[in-house]
Image (cartoon, rainbow, N blue to C red; front, side, top):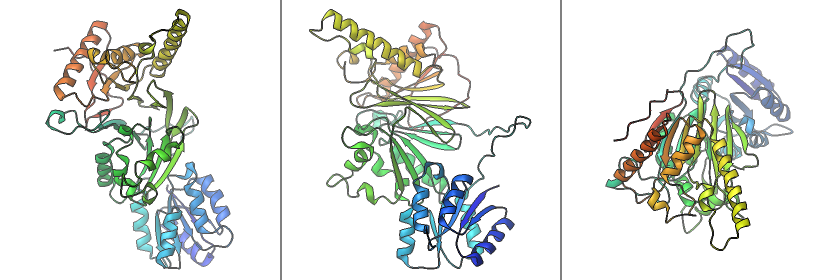
Length: 448
């Protein structure tokens, strides 16, 4: 049963409203003051919170601000109520974090319609006791590619099949929508999400690997950020000295963009990573530092239905150990450090179901790009084989590579897999490609 929390100091309004909601299938928790309301919200994690704005003590505006600042309550839909119908009251409530505003007296049919529209399907039931069989959701978890290029977008006839947008990958599973990087591919993703969910508020999580422009440049065009009902949690490391929020706001400052980050109506919550393990709902996330200029991380998403690792920018450590004039002892120390770091990456990727991995260059191209922070397709296959990966998607395609060139790289990768005698499915990431978790791995493809 869906739970609604009613916070209102007017008993003559609150009590009949609570009875009405119970008659229509809601489990109701109620209180007359803001402080108790916050305590009950943390305790019950209600689907919907109906909060009066003008209460003594902790008023409704403060309640809204507090709720929106707490991670555990980010999925609660917050409806502010007031007998004052001034536009500035409504606007201030929305700015404080409310998803919707209702003027008192409230028309019951309108309230029910609003609750049905905003709350959507009921959340999954709590875990059952050991003696009760557990029902497992059959909703598939999947990844979908929206941007697969590195460096710069390259639209045109030679990139139609694999796509020309820069890095952006969507993950859905365990009731979460997680976005990996916000290159230009996030623009069509945002349009699709808004069309799919229509008037339902979106609760999204964006994981940013690093602040290079091809991984953040699409965010100013992300449609969900322009809707006040939507909540977007953005996690990652910012560039040195400016932080994550500074990275996003900098590219939207005048004269680069007509709208500043602070003018976006959507609720944006920036969180600097402090731990390399955290959760997004029921999805357990691990992060690991990659070998790429600046601060760059990779992410691994672990779910009961499988795992996905996203390592879009990475150069094997051992490839950058030879430096002119380095002494023998220093060379040995550097090589040992590289060996340990490469082993750390392999362990991070161990037995992952889907690996999305940097494979920007072929071997010849890589020889003149050592130290640029990107991998060759040969090294990508080597990492996947050593880690026991099930499916490998070559990613971060070079902007100079046409579709035919990427096809050649895929065939080369498949030949390497066949030579190794290991079952590993290899393909190139393509815009629009959807890959479900839990689908049996096909036998390694024969090279043409």
